[in-house]
Image (cartoon, rainbow, N blue to C red; front, top):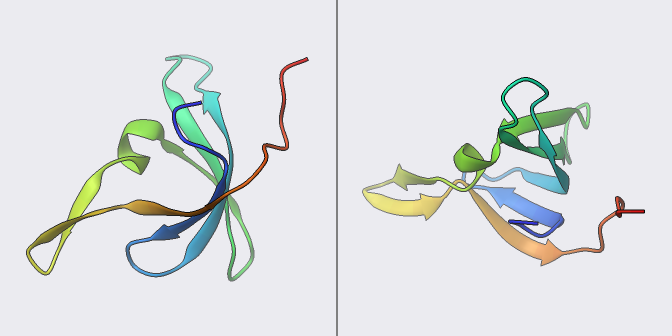
Length: 78
C-alpha cells in the first residue's frame, strides 16, 4: 500500500483515520478511504495523489496529511 493505514493529521488541524486504498470503479484511480475523527465522524474518499500533496502555509510547503501513528489494517487480502 502506498501509505500505511493509521492516524493522520490534516494541515488545518483535524485528525483522520486512514483505512485503506480503493480504486475508482470507472477510472481505476487510487483513492484513500478515511474517516474524520471529529464532528459526525463521516467517511471520505480522496484521490491518493491529492492526499499526498503538499500545500503552502505561511510561505512554507507542508504535507496536506501527515502520519501521526501507523496502525494495522482492518482490511487484508484473503
